[in-house]
Image 1: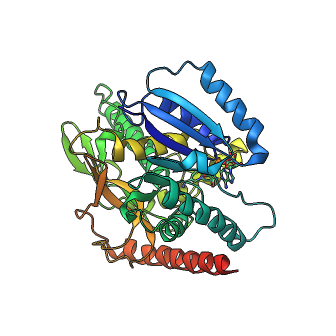
Image 2: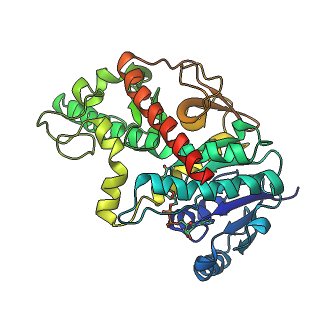
Length: 370
Ligand code: NAX
């Protein structure tokens, strides 16, 4: 069988550097799927890109990797692409307004859309990571009108995973303290597979809506509601901050869960002086593997994905892309998870996030007209 053609834009960037080994080891599309990687970057990054290609060769990734093309020629990179991972974008520079950034990236996405429309496989599956990720999906969908809208997605899995990570951190410390207090043996540590019902709705920005209202943990052989493990509803709720509470769940002192998830990217940036890369690459790998790997289970769990809002059952206005709960199905499709419903608090916050997405869309369109 011909290898799967996977284009990665921003191929010389830091997320690509963490993502390439995951793909090349067969951890994304399945161990039996051969991949031909097409790494694209812009001419000023050509040397760095060549260095990445050298390192790929030196890593002897022979299992899943059939070959690698490193190029600054976008037509060459996109020709025949069956999967497109769009990391390449214009970074925010000091003094730059958010709206300028949206305009610059809208121009890049316009070009990516044209490339997908003209040169990629007609059923190419796309994940947009470059920010503003959801609005970039919208721009792509305009300039790649033949591509089914369901094929265009954006990454909100990192926000989702950040929330799950914080919930697990908090749940495990409470379960371990409770078992120590009872004098019982230490309980089994919960892992991501022991959490269900989580979703991050809306934009990938500070307006995102981390929602734990339907979360359950698998404890002692049964699913139990989140409050029975973490009874602190102030921390869990959509309140903006805790009044002087202690640090729990791995967030900063006094932060609610929602606030900690929203600010996690900034916290990593503050600590590392570089934005999230390892966790972003891992989230992209999970997003793609849930969606496209033939290895996945028939009953995949609900996950957060940036998808078209057209025909969604949650009452989110149509014509944009937003993070919503979906279930991936075998064969590379996904459906909205209708098991989720919005409580009043979540709906109110989501409306604000959707208004921001509408605003970004209008700005991007205006900038493209200039
Ligand atoms: P880097 O700045 O390390 O790499 C970006 C690369 O893209 C650079 O090598 C640059 O030369 C290249 N590039 C710029 N314009 C291009 C174009 N027109 N065609 C091809 N390549 C182009 O950024 P990195 O840390 O890898 O992050 C990539 C993107 O992910 C950024 O836009 C970032 O904001 C976004 N993120 C999105 C996340 C999400 O959850 N949706 C989380 C992680 C990340 O912050």
